[in-house]
Length: 488
Image (cartoon, rainbow, N blue to C red):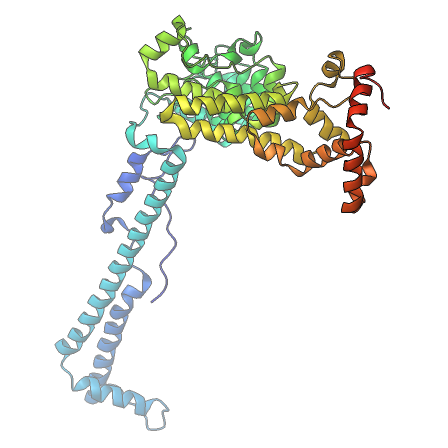
C-alpha cells in the first residue's frame, strides 16, 4: 500500500492572512468527519481494472470457441491465452464478478482506514500545538475567556510585537493614528509586555516613544526578572522615571495613585504587590541592574522594628497581617542579597554582620518564619566568608578585618590593627569567619610580629623564650607604664 499523502490544511480551517488563529477553528478541525477527506487513492481502482480484464478474457474465450478468432499454433502466447481462456470459461460470469467484490471492499476499507488515520494524526497534531501554545501562555489560560473585543488591526499589532516584526510595528504606529497601543490580549498583556517578554529591544524602544503608554512598571519588572539589561536601561529612560519616585514605589503603593503604571486586571500582576524594581533585581542577583537602579536613586528601605507601633505599621497589620509579614521578608531578602550588599554599602562586611545578627534575632521572634530568617542570616554570613575567599594579599585581608583604617587612626590606634570587624564577628558568633584560614593566618602574623622567626624554632627554644618573657614581665610592665607608645 502506498504511503498517505502529506496533510495540507483546508481552506475553511486556515486563518486568513494577517489574522490570529483562534481555538474555535481548532475545534472545527477536531469535529471534522472522515467523509470530508479527499477522493479515493489510485489503488482503489485496481479491482475495477481487474474486473474489466476478466470480462475481456471471457469474451475472448467465447470468440475463440465459436471460431470468430483464430489463434495459430506458432503464436508464442497461445499456450498462455488458451489456459486462461479455459479457466475463465469454466467459471460462471456472476461468480467471477463476485471474486472482485471482496477485494474491492477490502481496498475501500483500507482506503477509508488510511483516511481515518490521517485525520487522527491531524487531530493529534492540533492538540499538541494547542497544548504548546497554552503552556507558553501560562496556567491562567484555563481561566480566561477568549478576547472578542480586539479588532483585526489590533490582533495583527499584538502579533507583530510578540514575534518581533519591526517593520509592521513601525508602519502601524506611524500610519494608524487610531491604533490603541494599550490593547491587551485575552491574557491581559499589552504590546509592550509581549515585546519585553520575547526580548525585542527595537520594538520596546518604538513603543516607549508613544504617549500615554500603560503598564510600563510591569514591563520593567518583567525585564528585571528575565535579566534583560539593555531593555531595563531603555525602560528607565522613559519620562515616567525622570523624577525617580517611581523606582521607590511598589505596585500596591502605585495603586493608591490611581494610574495604570502597573496592571491590576482580573489576573493581577505576576509579581508580589510589595516588590519594588530594586528588590526584585536583588532577589534575582542581577548585579548590573542593581547598579543601574542605585545610580537612579533607588534604595531598599529597612523594615520597621517588629514591635513598632507607628500608624503605618498598625494599619498594615490590621489590613492584612500576612501580607505585612511577607513584605518584611521580601525587603530583608533584598537587603541580604550579595548584589545589594556589595553595591549599596561602603562597608559591606559590617553591614552584612549587623544584618545577620538582626535576622537571627527575628528568627526567634517570628516563629512562623523562623526558617526563612535563619536562611537569610546564614546567607549574610556566607557573604562575609566569601569576601575573605576573594582576598589576594595581606593588605586586602587587613582591610576586611580592620574595617575603616582612617577611623581607627583618628581614634588613636597609632597604626596597630584594631580588628574591629573580627571582634564584631566574634560577638555575633560568626564562626566560619573567625576560623577562616585567611583570618587565622593574619592573626598568627600579628601574634609573632616581633618574633617572626620563632614559629620555625623547636619547642625547647620556644620554652626558653617564654620563660625569659615571664621573668622580665615586671620590668616590661614598668617600661610600658612609662612609655606606652615606644617601640622598644
